[in-house]
Image 1 (cartoon, rainbow, N blue to C red):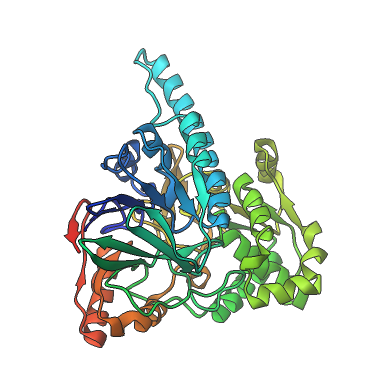
Image 2 (image 1 turned 90 degrees about the vertical axis):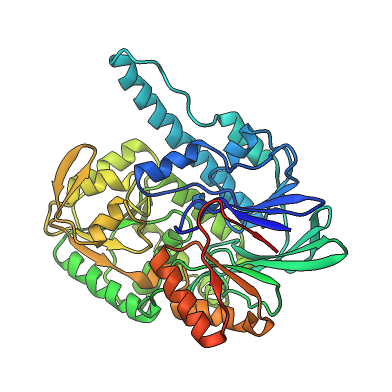
Length: 463
């Protein structure tokens, strides 16, 4: 059996892992790259595999960096099933259609510019028909049940605690009368986060492919983060400033709304208008509420109180471009939650352009910021940034709230690995920048005596 990494190897985006046995082949995730322009150029091609003979694609969850290259796989001839949990498939369809809209707009603008310059038009990497075919091929896989996805290859999904529908995949491969198991952690969530259940432990696997996004550090404790957020918000409200939250539409937005509604209910912060300026986040929130079977105990109890309905008049969806533009004229105090989460695209760039230079603006960074993104520049303390070709002064207050992250910090990663460490699996650290992988690998070697492999793009292991 051969395992090859075609993404999230030395970085945190583009997840794609290819398993080949003597009978079958499957791919785990088929995600987009995000970050610098040269990094995103990789999204013009599908992972280099034989799609006509690929038996199945399995999704750990629905974020774009795990499902975004599915239309490219279809374009290359893939016609087999795309498996994911029911919530993952609902959200993946939403994300892929949204990405298609963004691509269409981007290429229309590009081709208009090329036309004005007398240059030939360019074709987008994939078309709407490829997106819709990918969605048509999606098939649900349940939690906690072993089922065959290809000849000699079966899978079982357990909760990963990252976003709604996320899972860790235990894949069992029969080959040469032997059985071997590969555990893909997927993206692991922190323990004790709201709405979704905690990641479930595994006790046995021959090989573990483990994410390492925050392998070099821990987040601030969640409760301390909530207290810090409350303080920042109260100060911004007192100053009548705008609070901008670059947020991933899936997971992070719902966590923030949960926190605000709790804080409003308890009187921890004054009530003020909150604008969800993301069509995808609005639809994703509907999907979240449509899967109560995945709620954790706290969310179930909070839902029973009826408090969620009390503050809906202060939560304002702004799905249309016209409604979004009107937010430029809205006076603070208010909060605007918009994508993208790394500030490299979407409506948040417009809000940053209009407000970064104002000292009474507060920007809450609530998620991971990849190298080369606008969000990373803000976190790193940039005094000036370039937005839509314009140099913008950064006079706003930039706050990094790591405790809202949907990724497990170092301690929670080690806690998850601790359950399976006695099985002495081969360990592959993926989905992390090198400094994070190297740090986590050293800790695991010191604690468990297990040496981790840190592969780069395109490298393989014979299992």
